[in-house]
Image 1 (cartoon, rainbow, N blue to C red):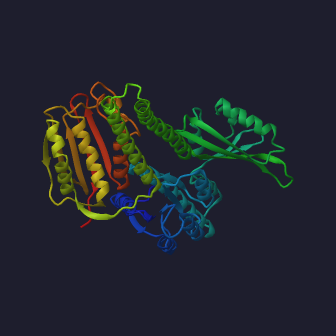
Image 2: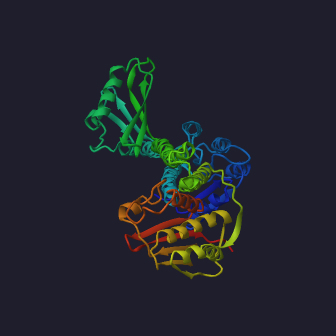
Length: 492
């Protein structure tokens, strides 16, 4: 039950996103076509039927919804995955109405899109199998016994969970996705009452539905299976009626809406954290300036110089924080305008280390470079400078006197490998787990005097992910930290 070599079409106006997806799946032996505009995507997408389509929702010339509609119009069974930085309930509803298979928010890590791809490919197999069964039936090659298998195959190819109940709430038909989405502990068996296997709060729902079955037209309910939003499903239940409008039973369809709920939760958390981080420096600046304006410590100007300098430092911190927030927001919204060029990664590393030479000397540190020549990547120069600056400045800030900053580059299986290592204060295991979260900063006796926004590494990870790269960190408390970054090498 596997498609060995899938045909994939990627419609996206971002070069890094197209190339990242292409590299990922071509390395697995699949065939990948790309289109940088919506109209080219439509031309390619309807000229032949691909196994899986990856479509950006916001493309430069036309809307991704139009591309989706054109492809689904030609191939109603096409599996289309929407990739977008403009995730919302409205766009999800619209694309789902048009038949989109899945909805994934940018930027995403390679393992996230791999998981979506594997599920989509499995569904594609079921669709092709069902199609083959239909052809066989048309040629009168199917027997009655095979008809049940055909129906089962079609039902199993649906990504949503489905259950059909009779008038006594007994299970008539279901697919594997239904018990999986509800994470049922008891086995779901045909002919057994569904009340015996459902959790208590869902049993009440079934009872309410059957109590009002004669007047019920349909009901939609949302259930949190794993809070806060790790697994959330939407249940749409509709009565099955005969020609005399009598209720024969019910069909219930479950849809996994966890990603949309997680998106709402993350946006709310981000706004709360941003407000908190902005409030602290503004409150401090206000307090210092009120003290200066009110002359509460006397009339000697020199008394207030320290408070004015503190206000200046706080304002610089605030500007840095706002710039980091804006950069993260641009990446998430897909509004980053990149000027992709061929860069020598080792040359970029040497330039950044030279820039920090005075700071390295002042801090009593030494720097060591082990660089591989001719390590070419296709990337935006400013973004690569931002990645290198963040990693190397952290290696300086969080190091010890007489410590070492080691920076290495090398080749590794189609990737440019960058290693930034320090002999500094390191991190505890629980701190390393949260390293790339927004506003997270390790709190211990060594970091009390070190300033920062807690957004630098978040920004670095988002940039690296957007190039279909990877970033990893290894750290031992009070011994040092090593960051490893992999960026796809430029094609020759």
